[in-house]
Length: 290
Image 1 (cartoon, rainbow, N blue to C red):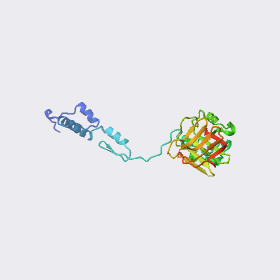
Image 2: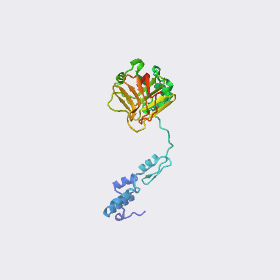
Image 3: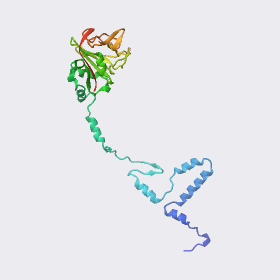
Image 4: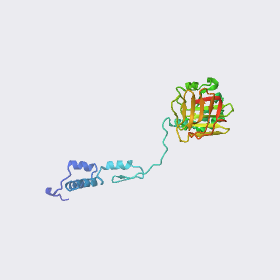
């Protein structure tokens, strides 16, 4: 082999270039990218061209390429800077600690209208001289849903506390829960009212549209708020009124809780609750949420 003259010998790679070539970089490609970048900077719109250059396949060490390829899931491959993934089959997540127990407890709780809840509502009715369990059960669907599931306590009854409207007010002091007022007249008729707030002394009418009147005559009849006025409940020393229009009261009781009356009124569009428009009270009870 004839040795070339020393002047014609091609210059060998520098130590830096040799190091890059050893790491797997393609030197001609590097030079081409440098030249493209230089042209992009010197011409207008070099930022767009730079973004175009960054989107192309840049040289990288062979070892790094092998590592990246090996880490891909089977069935996936890299094309430029875009990835294609193979979705793994979905698996149910394991419940966090305590989640299973909380779900079991939630399922074990009785529903709002379930048998367990209903029994809680009527657990204290053995004290009642007016309502039996079946009559109370019929009233449950008409109570506001937010009171569902609570037990009821006998706050006032004439058999225990005497016949006095003032005594009823005193027993209601500090109460904020709704009240079920149940009466039996001397003819044996059962009727009453549900007040969405505690019964108290007042100079004007109070309450909400959840208030209603009812009567068992002998089947249950419920008279709800019509929306025509807001004369729900008003109590003074000598008179308790529930519902009113044109001087007529849906239900009224005197200060001795001995005598009362009922007439149709626009507040509830009710019928006469008792056997007659005016009646004498045999028993009266006030129940509040326990």
